Length: 288
Image 1: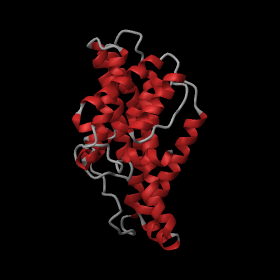
Image 2: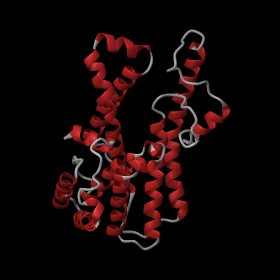
Image 3: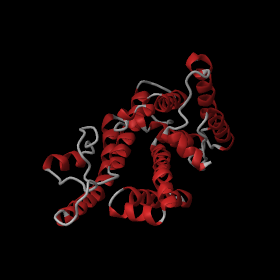
């Protein structure tokens, strides 16, 4: 797969935004920044975290490139190998970073005091982090932001296992994408409204799934921005149907099926709307 300058640029900008957010929230730097530049500090706290949604959409967009709908469903072994390759690529630098952070914390613990200082690692917490289960087990993180690594891996596993299962059951391309679109809606309208779900992949599936559907709809050849409301999403899908290579009919079918769900469900006629304050809605509103 060739690298994309646009995607790399988005990652760089998003990563620096997250760094500014963390500097404005955690540690002694947060107080200094707020005293020196209060308006900038407030902006970093409120808006820089929205860059997480950029990573989620890009993650789904890139994950979709490994999915083929024109060949038989892979075997469970092949799916397991794909998940393992992802884990083997993701975890070593992640564990190295945690080891360095833990060493610095150990050296500084007698000299630095504050509620922002992370807990000392235990064998149990290290194992949980190595398996990306610390959030599900409700264990304290060894560093701010490592929750995203666990969620990213969860989303990758959920996406690949779901697609594999549907293909094994004989589902066609349109049906698979329809299920993914409905899972995005379930994430947006149910899971994402309850913070108790924020340690699970489906809480973030709204953004990750947008990336998947964009990749398929645009033929993994262009990147579009999707609005946070139904009308904007429809326009984006229509754009994908016009310019997509190979996936145009699929996106048109998925769009029509999703719209038929909206029309048929009484709860979608104004009584229940996607929350404008959900992470995905806020992030995509900022991107427009």
